[in-house]
Length: 114
Image (cartoon, one colour):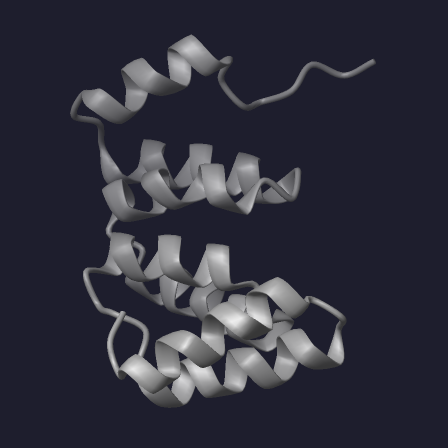
């Protein structure tokens, strides 16, 4: 079995807390993404300054109806989810059977804030 390129949990914590070159942070983020571990990749994408990749991840979260992922990415980008995005997320969540995420997205869109 091939060894994973992602750090163990303790190493991950240490890596997040220290400074690192953007290229190294991006490499770690891509390793997480390759294993479909998107939430864990977000801190490293932020450290790498990969704003385009974060924006793409945000768009994926909205299209999939994943309210949790959308909120985590929005926090990393320091850009709240807009009302229109919450509405789109609610529709996507409803169509994929994610009723809790749909309800959360509807509440957030009614509030008009993150």
